[in-house]
Image (spheres, one colour):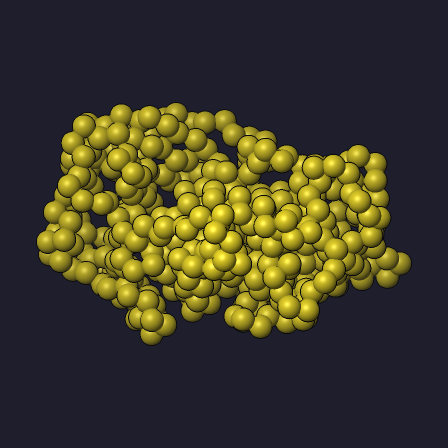
Length: 400
């Protein structure tokens, strides 16, 4: 990564992790786009990026039609990754480990919510099924189900994939197709005289770059980037904890990605297991706050894991990390599209934990918006920024 080769770019992308690179690559693949693209990334190691801390899961178990369709395209993209990447034999195949989500309910009200969600998912072609407690026990006898009324489960196009490889190839292919990546940081923006557009971005290195379009793909730092254009964006860093553990008594079959009613989730991870959760007190944190609360495993995660799966009474944590959600405090769903006043400032933000699985469809959609002025493959307008100003929340009941 060196300094920018030009003084003017058609598109400047602020942040080069999964969304910056997805968009950059899709722009090179979108018919009708022929502009120059610059990706500005403050840390090319991506050590603290949410992309580097992801659990790389994908689900169709949402309650909102658009979220379901976004993930359905994501599954198709993963399963046909090499084909989407142009058929280059160097591009690896991306397996999708479809052991599914097991979304459990311990109250009649939540069981009914799951049934309603299953109906919507099924109407769109998803293979989600609602299971009674007896049906769960017959298929997965290792669960303790005394408090469980029912669950939703889907073993088709739902589970784990290698998000790191997908990110790597987005980045590689974008650069191969002519996108410039530089190691620098956007520290300011200049608007035109009417405040209706960003004229240029200022870099930490001292350079000023003219921009036709600026796209905010800054992950948990999205609010800081938006503020440079005078925009208030409700996206904040929130901590999420992940633990990899070994079990003295491993299960005799895959553990679905189990969403316990407590909010703790767990799944198979090769010969090991993965578990994670938000903290009970979930404040906004500083961008550089990755301090680890070691009490969360002992006081929250392990008691739930060992209760729900009694075979996990004897386990050993072999790895653990904390990452940041780019948490949309307004409605916990993506914020996309153009700003209502600063017309050439585009959002690709606030995924609140859905980011990796939604990146193929969202990157494609914003590339279409930039190129054609509209979403063409899938209508993503329900995610548009204007809903924030109108106070109209995107309704999604299945937020984990």
